[in-house]
Length: 385
Image (cartoon, rainbow, N blue to C red; front, side, top):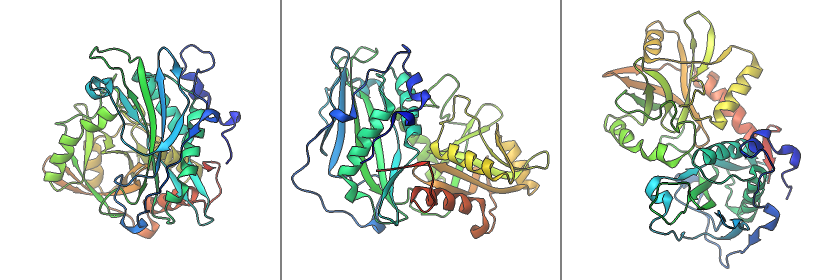
């Protein structure tokens, strides 16, 4: 298996070390592998529910302030043993990442832009006061784990192996403080479509009653608390026959994110320009890897204006009235891209138009991204396992 070279290490990963010196980290070369004696049966790719089935093995790496990082371990998948006073359980000292491994028609397994996940995870760890590590070393550990369980990567271009790195504070104390112990682990799950509706459009509920994130908060970090706090609003959205929450911010009802996705609006803007717009990374938006990829792809096309700018519900409603909206969609690792068909806002159902599906922007983006992910298009965005 190829290793992650030093040249692949992003400066952003190293910059998360506040001392400015080399990061004190675990080393992938020290990984201890203990294979399980029996393997579980593999599920059918066509009947996969998101995140309910898990592979044979997991990766665990422990840290303490006294001893630093221990050797990484790949071992049989199983339950964790945590102290009842664990800081992750009481004070949400916890974060995670989401990435995928894809099996191409050439039967080779690829990871999609995984160093961006490592950079984001280090940013979240810094915000959560959890210890730093070398992102390239963690990526190499993840590659080893995926290699061990590579038979679990579905033989399908509509399914993949979801990778969930998770980082917990395991301080056995009820004091609210920086934890002196931590656990980093990675589990794998074969998955199909994130939404039960498959590739059909999703409906959104936009209401300012609940706030996902705020300036100075942790909305730009991938922390479990951001998601757990959203479940109540998600339930209300579903009671209103909507699938996701369109999160609003401020008195002017700025559009921010869609449930677990970043949001894009493809329209003719106020100045008469054809534009693809998405909210800026101003501290309340999660910097999605798919979001970044869409921005880079469409800017490379040079077909229309691509902007990171504030959008409001008033501007959307006016654009719909004036028939200037072309498409609206969410993006994320789990869903890739998901078109929006309806927004319920102030008791009004706003119907979002869509170009002919075969010629739509969503269809083109979905094809170009998945062609890269599944190896149909050569790209330096993928790393072979």
